[in-house]
Length: 140
Image 1 (cartoon, one colour):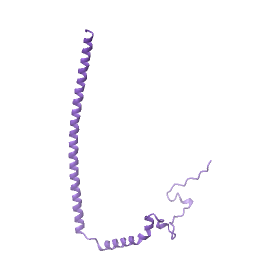
Image 2 (cartoon, rainbow, N blue to C red):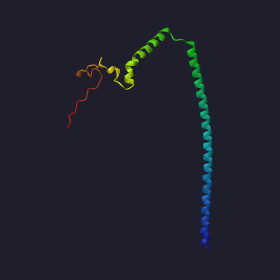
Image 3 (cartoon, rainbow, N blue to C red):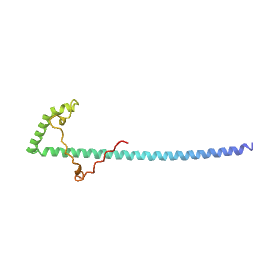
Image 4 (tube, one colour):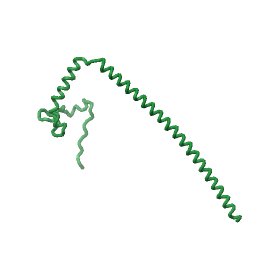
């Protein structure tokens, strides 16, 4: 029995050590949980403040828009310009309709006039501020 006593004492000490570590971990977990609760409350307060600030800003913007719309009428030349713009848009709809529906070519690619490109002279690349073209490589 005397041999079992030291082993029991050792096991009891290990058990107490494990219980002590467990208690420490439980305390750490509890403190961490409290910290997380505090952080969540702070975040919720920040979110509420941000929502309130955003709604206030939106209301202010709406008021400004209403004031700008109510106080000022567009100048006659702007109204005429806008009317001519929308008239030109409506006139060009049939030309663009087939292209936008994916049924035809781009309107500027028509047979009337191809897009123009400036003619390039070999000696003028340096004059235009562009780097020289690379030389073509032959296949080996």
